[in-house]
Image 1 (cartoon, rainbow, N blue to C red):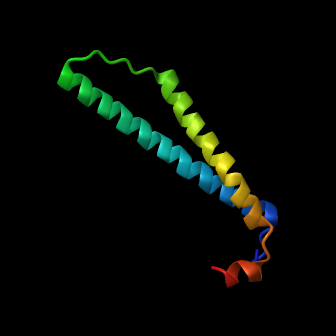
Image 2 (spheres, rainbow, N blue to C red):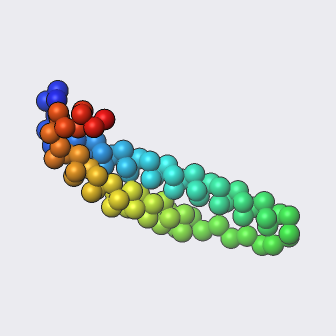
Length: 89
């Protein structure tokens, strides 16, 4: 905001950051889950079923959690005075 960003720009930046982090966290979680499931299934001889629709739901849910829990800090940051924000940084 000190260089001319509007509160809407700060809000968008925070939300994009929260969505990106949660999305990639969800993707990494899915990859680890699939790898772990294949490893255990191969070791114990269990059958395995990996459904792409469930994977998509898990990643979308992860993104939604990031947006929901990123919204409050984003709104708070977009309302801060630039001098106050720099003082506590």
